[in-house]
Image 1 (cartoon, each protein chain N blue to C red):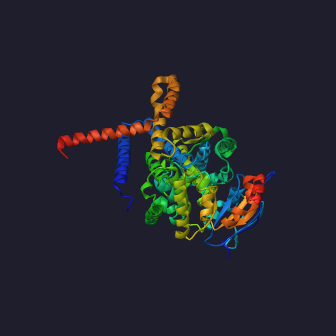
Image 2 (image 1 turned 45 degrees about the vertical axis):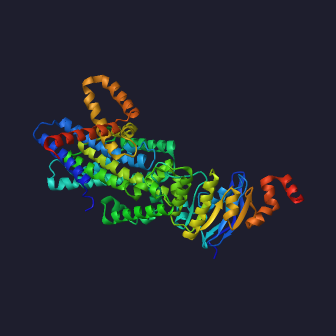
Image 3 (image 1 turned 135 degrees about the vertical axis):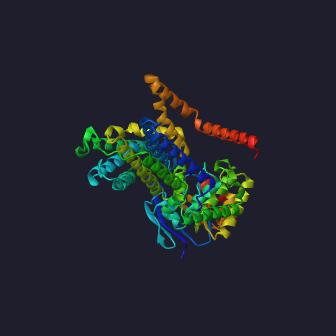
Length: 328
Length: 261
């Protein structure tokens, strides 16, 4: 039970507390469905950003086709719930929930499989060339789903049962992020980093560069698929226009703002950048100016270390107050 | 059986014959030098042996097994490690992490172990860190373990690169100009280091070097290359007197002078 360190217990308790709080507020009617929806979308974006971080931040491969894998996950998992497992509004709970898990898993696996097949030829490319190839893949997926009539074509895949709720989204966010973090903090992750740092040196030390690129790409796409599946079952819709390269750029943006190679950075940045545009709604059209300006500020002056320092200072002050009042 | 056998090794880049018909036999425990003017094809020979280039023609056998055409990481797994002319450390990682990556095959846990954090994972990680630290202490780098590699002084970066190559536990080590850019003191300690690791790890070494003091001082045999061909081979004493070598380095005029002496 070595994972039961103080730090891990504290993080787990914090996550659980936040979850209970949100759930409580929602059932007490104090949290509107709109706010809850934004929180779920933010968490899904966190999965996407962390997974892109595996490819770009850790393994150093520049990919802008992440939304393509998300689309595969969304469509395949929705096909499973709709056509294979036939889940509908009156499916009993005991079957509905496991069926959702199966669908999500199928969607994720499909995304991973596609990534594996796409990765073998494209990961030979470097830098800009890989970016263009992945962008092209993204576009192919959009065109493909636009032309698949049995999943709605350009009208989108409608009638997907609403199976995503806070429990599913929060639970799978925690599990996905934990798996990716554990991957990164192991010799596998180290070898991915070696590939990023210097491919030739890595190869000379016996690191199978191709294998680790494909491994990172496949694993990350698996979770992009999970995120896509969750989103489709949240919106009850999968539409080709949700998965264009603009979505890929959005994820990349969250990654860059949060910092390449930082998992907490990715999570915080995904949450902030999802919530921020919603909070700017009061400014109406001006938000289209404010948001990009804020983004530029974020990229130039990375606020994350600052935020961390402020948090540490607040913690220290609270502790000092506590000690003053109650002594030790 | 010789440790390494190279036969008729040739590499052509378009119109340039970089290496032609190089033959080389290496017994276990030898330390040989590979010298020659700039552009003679020495590093290309290393790139061919370590798998970064595919030979146009010829055979490379390690303990009788053909290795020409294998990928670099496969060749590394068979026991050939190398360093690079321009140091290729993982510059933004710690010294310890550099060695840990080289030690990767000793982690002995699977992807599943790392994801669900089994006991095997923790044991493997612990073993990896302990072995890497012990390894660093062999090279006097234990106090630097947590430093970022790029902050090390030049001499120690070279030392770390050699340590990292040895962390893969090779039988054959290819050193590409390890003394380049070193001052006389650093060069001296490098020579001691090479002789130390050769004994300690029972290594066979091929050394490319321009500093004659190093080559003549520690190599048992020397091969001289020029324009992709081996033009002379022999003991340091023989090489210094070889007319073709003098010509390759100093030109025909010098050869005439040497002959007159």
